Image 1 (cartoon, protein in one colour):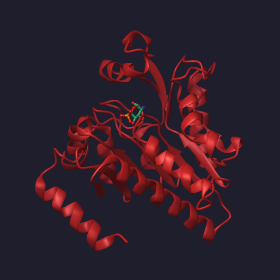
Image 2: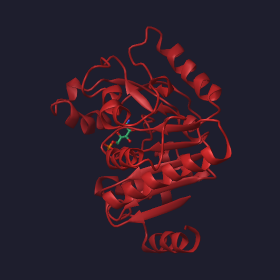
Image 3: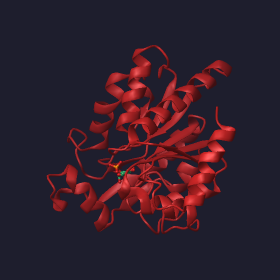
Length: 264
Ligand code: GLP
């Protein structure tokens, strides 16, 4: 696991956007096959999306040959609802880049057959050639996508029940009324994420510090599902100083030294 630490969330977000753009461009140089990216929602990726939009507008990267799969969506929330992940993705990314509409995949939380929707999603990922890079955020409890604590680290796309904690945290998007937050979601599994060739996780601010400590220094455990990254050969955490704050000083120094020695 690599850990990239920046002074603040803004510079970490810019780093992540340029890293992703470089990966898209590098694949385009070697093959006509599309770059397949996994995408996340939440406040964390917004600045990275802003920077990617700027790079597209400046002609530095294009999403014309990119296929995307989003991580999750609430069950039963209309797609048109301002807090659906469909609305979020269009507002913060898709409406401002050149990715063809047919290349965008987001789970349908209103499908008549939710289990079929999830199974079809896994198939679509395989048919696209597998995910090259999965971009994720984390919940305060270390959940990745909506893989709450005790999700199997081998889990696949499925219907999940949200914890009360997650619903309380996410109630800030629903008039601070926890009763308005859906109780279930569709989510890619931990293994759907770790099957990707590369995983990049963003984590900013003190509220993520305990989850990051557990993910980096704790055991690989279903209690903190992002800790599955420990078993991935190409996992990178991109964080700010606040989010790394609960890790040991020696861990912090090591990650800084590795970046200095190995990264361009
Ligand atoms: C939700 C999403 C996660 C996201 C998390 C963190 O739970 N399902 O994918 O990582 O929120 O959100 P934020 O970035 O707003 O802290």
